[in-house]
Length: 76
Image 1: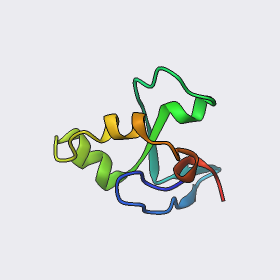
Image 2 (image 1 turned 60 degrees about the horizontal axis):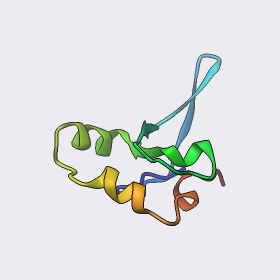
Image 3 (image 1 turned 90 degrees about the horizontal axis):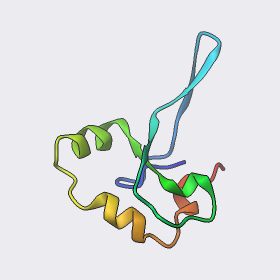
Image 4 (image 1 turned 90 degrees about the vertical axis):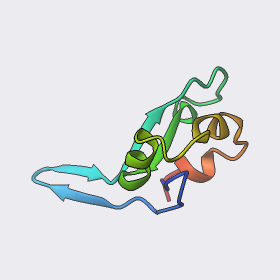
């Protein structure tokens, strides 16, 4: 996965026995989607904080209109 806002590539680290991603998946109001994954917008920790603080406006609407969602959510 990569961050939809800044393009940062996901980094997965092992904490104890669990694998943890530095990219969060934010549920959107996407009405139609071909796969469940497309409903979730990936954001890195910095962009997530900026989005929560209102510094990244309109990104959810942009994600809903995005035609190439799999470019951001597919695993390499």
